[in-house]
Image 1 (cartoon, rainbow, N blue to C red):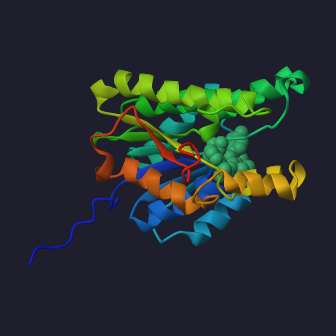
Image 2 (cartoon, rainbow, N blue to C red):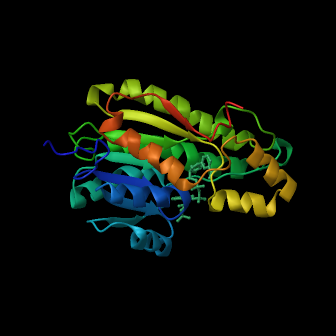
Length: 257
Ligand SMILES: NC(=O)c1ccc[n+]([C@@H]2O[C@H](COP(=O)([O-])OP(=O)(O)OC[C@H]3O[C@@H](n4cnc5c(N)ncnc54)[C@H](OP(=O)(O)O)[C@@H]3O)[C@@H](O)[C@H]2O)c1
C-alpha cells in the first residue's frame, strides 16, 4: 500500500510571516507550523509574538521584532536572518494597517504611513527576499495580503484600497520579473475577517446596523483568520507550484454578490 502524501506538507520549509503578532498573520504562523514549516515571526510587539509562538506546533521557530517601515534596513535584517537560520523558502506579508477616513480629512502624513507599511514594505521585503542566499534554491514563493477593498469602491477607504490595489499590480509584475529565479508571487484577496483590525473598526466607527449590513454583504458571512491562512498555505505549498501572478479571492462570496 502506498503512503498517503499531503501536497500541503511544509516540512523542511522556512517561512517568514510578517504581522505574526495578530489576526491573519498569527493564524498563518500557527497553521504553517502545523503543516511542518519552521516559521520566522515578524511584528513590532515581541510579547505578542511570544503569545503566537505559544499557540504553534513545536519546531525551530524564531521571533524577529522589526518595524517594517525601516525600508533601508530590510535587506541587511533579512540577510542576517538567513545567515543565522538558513535560506528562506517562503515570504508572507500579512502586516498592514487600515484607515477609514474621507479624503477631505486625510492627513498626508497618515497616508504616507499607511503606504509605507502596506505597500512599500512589500517592495522592500520582496527585494530583500530575491537576494541569493536569502531565498532558498527550492522554488520559493511570496504571498501578499490584498483586500476586496482593492476591487470594489467603498467611501472612506481610498488610501487603504489604493495600497491593496498596489499589491495586486506588484505581485503580477514581480511574478514575471522573478520568474527567472523561479520565485512565485501571488496575492490573497480577503473579504471581512474577524481580527483586531476589523474589531476596532466595528467598535469605534460603525453602528450595530452597519455591522449587520457588512455581514449581509458576505453570502457566507464574515470570515475567520483560518479561512484566509488555508489559502496562504495552499499558495506556498506544492499545491501552488504552477500558480504565479494570480490573486486568490477568499471573501465568502462578497465580490460575487
Ligand atoms: N481583517 C480583515 O478583514 C482583512 C480583510 C482584507 C485584508 N486584510 C489584510 O490582512 C492583513 C492582516 O490583517 P489583520 O486583520 O490580521 O490585521 P491585525 O490583526 O490588525 O494585525 C496587523 C499586524 O500588522 C503588524 N504591523 C503593523 N504595523 C507594523 C509595522 N510598522 N511593522 C511591523 N509590523 C507591523 C502588527 O504587528 P505589531 O503591532 O506587533 O507591529 C500586526 O501583527 C493586513 O494586511 C490587512 O490589510 C485584512
